[in-house]
Amino acid sequence: MKILAAFLSLVLLASAHAQRVSPLAERPKWSELEKYQESITREDFLYLLDEVYAPGGAWKPFIEASATSATIQTGGKARPFVLRFASKNEAIKPAARFWRQKTQMPPRPSNKPLQGIRIAIDPGHIGGQWAQMEERWFRIGDSKPVTEGNMTLYVAKLLVPRLKALGAQVSLTRNKPAPVTSLRPEKLADEARTSLEADGDRITTSAVHTEAERLFYRVGEIHQRAELVNGKLKPDLVLCLHFNAEAWGNASHPTLTDVNHLHLLVTGAFSGKELAYEDQRFNMLDKLLSRAYPEELAISNAVAASMSKATGLPPYVYHGGNAVKVGSNPYVWGRNLLANRLFQCPVVYVEPYVMNNREVFARLQAADYDGKRLFGGKLKESIYREYADGIVRGLVDYYTNPR
Image 1: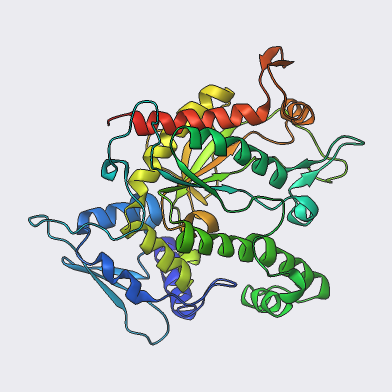
Image 2: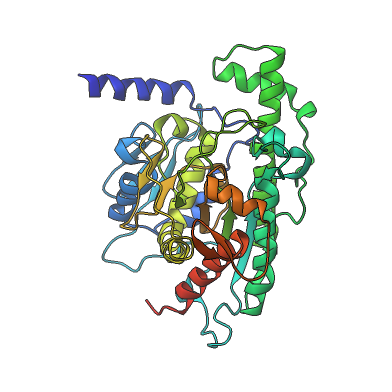
């Protein structure tokens, strides 16, 4: 009875919010999925929904699968979108997309193992004067502030010449600690009120201010980067660079911890509540039908292996329902994040190092340096170079491995 009640609740939620879109998102053009007609079998479609993209039946209030097609809710009174499955007995049409799988690329010379591969690097967050607003900043006494947006940008700029030297075509979604979007919090008060109302939150001056800031740095900024990636750069993969953190409390008097870990994320684990938003339902299906998952998983597995070797960090383990374990690699999880669902190509989303870990904090205070220094009883290169080494080795391993 509890399972039935939960399912009926989700159906009602889906019906109530059939036309609802996420903050700052536009209503999707469902006709754009026509290019995927007859490009996937029923078995593959349901497998990807159940095991990766919408586990636990989260997709069922929105998608009905027959023997030959899937009928997908669009929004309001609009006609559903019907996706025709490929027959197992016929040649399957290739998925239409701008990115290439490794197997679709020409052979590369041994001295240029990344020759011709288009790589976009997305240094997570913004940093600079925006870091405290983003809550990706803390400081102990007179120490140098730990600012994630600046740190990811530094790693990105270490990666660019190294990847280019290996033959890759490399671009950045940002090249300075400043936003890409022209939006600013003061322009988003109306959108903030709408977002609060939709979630049933109390509307106060403080709440509107905080929500407007969140929409600026976490939503508008990523939408703008996605427009750049999908419309101009059109890479074969995106490297999303981040540092992780445990709760640190007061940013001016943070709590340090001995906990440290590493994990990587591929697109997945959409919940029923998230799929009730029309744009997220569309984004999930676009990602699924483009067949990004096998490539995302394979590259992420290779980078996870090299990053774990470079850092010596244990895998992070999710205990909530916002992530799903994919594949057999303990470091790789599926999760629905704005960046990895909006970028229309394979995304390698890297989360190493707990910034408020005691040793990591000491290494960040040491900044970048040549050679090795002693931390935790071991000689180590700078944390930035270690991070870059792990990324480069993982990509070379993946693109030189014939499997």
